[in-house]
Image 1: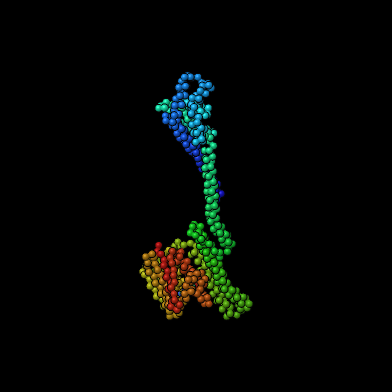
Image 2: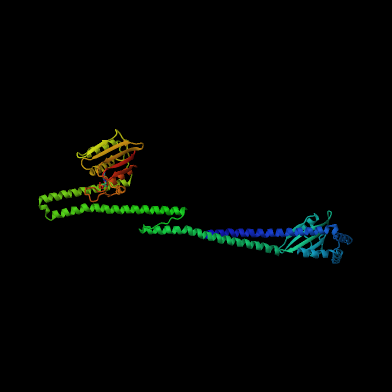
Amino acid sequence: VLILVGLLSAVLLLVNLQMGSLLARAQLEETANHLQIQALLAANNLQDPLSGYRHEFEEHEDDDDDHGDHHDDSEDDERQRAVSHLPDWATNYAEETKAQVTITDGKGRALLGDRSPLTTQELQLARNGQPFHRWTAHSIFATAPVLRKEHLLGVVRLAIPRGEASTRSRRLSLSLALASVLALALALAAAVVLSRRLVQPLKRLEQNAVRASRGEWDQAVSVEGEDELASLSQAFATMLTELQDTFERQRRFVSNASHELRTPLTRLKLRTEALVDGGIDDEKIAKKFVREIDGQVDRLTRLTNSLLDLARLEEKPELQTTAEPVSVLKEVAASLSRTDRRMIVKLPDSLPPVRLSPESLELLMVNLLENAFKHTSPGGEVRLTAERTDSGMTVVVEDNGEGISPEHLPHLFERFYRADHARTDGGTGLGLALVKASVLSAGGTVRVESQKGQGSRFVVDLPGC
Ligand code: ADP
């Protein structure tokens, strides 16, 4: 605001100075022109044969001729006397025009009024039959020739003080300055209002950022209007929400991971303590506890491996590819087939290569198929199909097992999410998270369709490469 007002003041000052001097000049010029018209009218009046004054000039001229070129006061007096009617005319005219009237003869010598002679320029122009105006520091002068045909009989000179013209131009300059000050005040007010409008939302954003940095996420970022600041606030609000979600996910992840690790560790501790406290002496109990310990270690290993796989898949996209996905799908299906549940496999002869390492593709399929078997009762059916698509391939794993309640579906691919927490089927809740991470790292998508009691269907789309 200060810079704006400073610049504006400087510009207005310059404009005012420039305009002030232009106005002063224009005023002088106008007044002088006006005076010149008056002088011309006066000269016209004097040279008009009907007015009777011309005769006085002519008379004086004759007089002048008689006396030759001698100039002294007595000659001047004579000239004065010769023009007997002119003084009355001049007095009237001076009253009319408020100007000082001087009348000279054809040689520029004063007959009436101001004694100062005409300037050479004035006289020269008068001889050429031209009027003239000029100004000095204090007065404005206008001259007009009194002619008889081409011959210069005399000159009328009007003079007025410069004061009036100066006062008028000063008055105009003052109004201009006042208008400028008013414009400046308005600009200042507008700048203050604008800067407030700009600064206040920025301050709010700053406060929100400071609060967010202190961990106070649940604060509303106000978004008003449709300008750039509003979209900045909107972007900031979106960023805050996303950060909040990320932190919340991370917090849940750490808490879930600790919980998942703590359970087998507690069981391990209980069994080792029981063994130390004498259980080791009873061979039957010792064997049972060691088997349990082995199971918990397996679980911990599975959990750790899954976490490592997840971290690897989420960290960077897969660089390796599987040139022949069909063989990987066939191998996985063969290794998981069970006698108590039917497995139908429908695969084409070949599928396009995909941007997933054979190990990751295997991990993905194992997780989907193991889940399908796990949630299907004996006698049920698991179906694996795959087909080529325009962009790559689609793999579908279906079962006619227990299905999933609608409320679980949106969370199924989250880490550690289990639809039925009460079940102790050895699951870690990381299987589908791993499926999603590997599909995403290959640039694909995964979705689930399911109805409670009727089975589930997982559809994976993978782009070719
Ligand atoms: P888990 O290790 O518990 O199997 P997953 O991430 O693989 O974890 O699966 C998450 C949850 O999704 C499971 O706890 C299970 O309740 C549900 N689920 C996954 N696949 C199926 C399926 N084919 N049928 C029914 N429920 C399933």
